[in-house]
Image 1 (cartoon, rainbow, N blue to C red):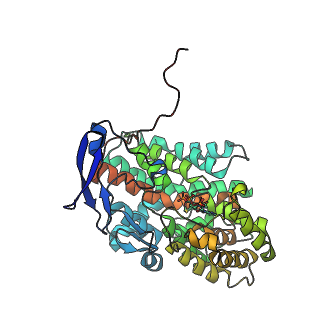
Image 2: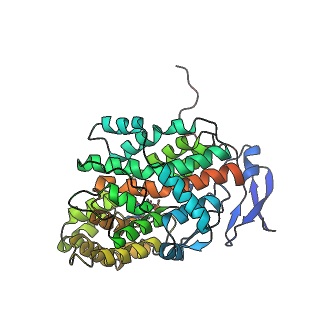
Image 3: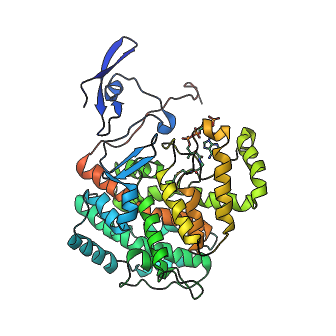
Length: 416
Ligand code: ACO
């Protein structure tokens, strides 16, 4: 709490509202008292609203900086594995080698799916969107968490979800590709095992260290991003006391949308429909024409008003992965599109830069993952962030059930 207060005069009330100062120096006015006076604030889309106290992730949108538990994302992408990041997010400190080994063992011992989940996924209509399949697959595991929310329930669910999500996602990817699923292998690392499961006779990337590292980096970059839409959905659901699987399913539903996790799929579709560098100028004109409602997918962010630091890392990964296959058309197109957009007044004035999804789809395509399955990879990664938030809400910074107010603009009371 800072020593300063904000003064607010409203109706007959003269109020001094306490101001909280974050570790990194932002100020947040505590308006909690207003509800007791029957006065409410209005902020659709929560553009200026802090919903909780949190120690997990920090973003400086103006400077394009991101850190998990204080560690800059660039260092985590370079020096850690995704499992270390998942441990760090959940426990607050990085693991010792013994702790990491113990976690990795728990993960590999729990990666197989129960027959029921396998059969449920097999039964789904082939035209079901992969994110719809994921919702169903994760829901079917809720029997693993039949107890009310508790510290132990959250701990168990963390291992089960981090272990089983790759197998569920691989099952869905192979169903979409109409290829058989390879069973998980306990001798491989987390990312190598996932690549092994989605490989087939034409493409086995699990033995290529560059691809294994690239997947690990993609998972690390997508693991956490403070109070974004899906994490907020998870926290809102978890605030009701429901179990961890119930809360995670809310996050998957929220992540599916094209304004959020669905953007990388939409971005690849956009690049394919542009088709050729010569078509970029007319596409940009279409984006700027508000009557078309066309957006440059993979551009813009609610918080970043500068380059998304994750996009910088992914762009350089793209270079390394695609070095071998010279002249990747989509990557060349994406780079040209970025450079034209970033020199255009429309994008400059609105601080619109590439976000993490602008280049990630290109790498996922190189891994043989179908576009409709891109958001699965995001969900796989973000699950570790979601669970860390559930744990924090339950054990460290609890708050009452999330229940916003509204500005009612419907009919006055009338007779039926
Ligand atoms: N293309 C064209 N114009 C854009 C874009 C874009 N991608 N993004 C924002 N704008 C414009 C808006 O039209 C608006 O213009 P105006 O002031 O003339 O009305 C202005 O920039 C502000 O945009 P808002 O929609 O108010 O910004 P908001 O913070 O609500 O939206 C969002 C952020 C949803 C990410 C938006 O930038 C967008 O739709 N981007 C494309 C989808 C995308 O890439 N999503 C992934 C986000 S990252 C993630 O979830 C991992």
